[in-house]
Length: 136
Image (cartoon, rainbow, N blue to C red):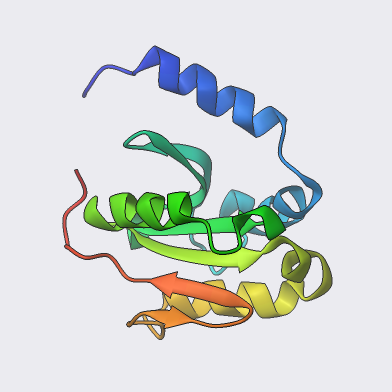
């Protein structure tokens, strides 16, 4: 078993304390294997970044984005880094979590079940499958 990276663990703990209302609402649905038995964690360190939510068994990251994320090149690099580490990335909008939670959960389940298997960029969500099969 590898040793823990204490600075990253401490930062992840800090981030879990300041989640927004959409993240809190989504976490209520994802925690404790509530979504079809899949285990999710919050603020998982991946490279220099922290994933909002991650399902290790499916190598799926779910990011909840507010309007400040629209078209940001930093998010593109972040997605590429996570994809390169073997993670698929699903980005959903903060507003959709608050107003259309059932639809967001359906989209997450589709990604978990493998029904989302190719790049998808839509108005309400963005899915980027992993570029390799192994996590680093």
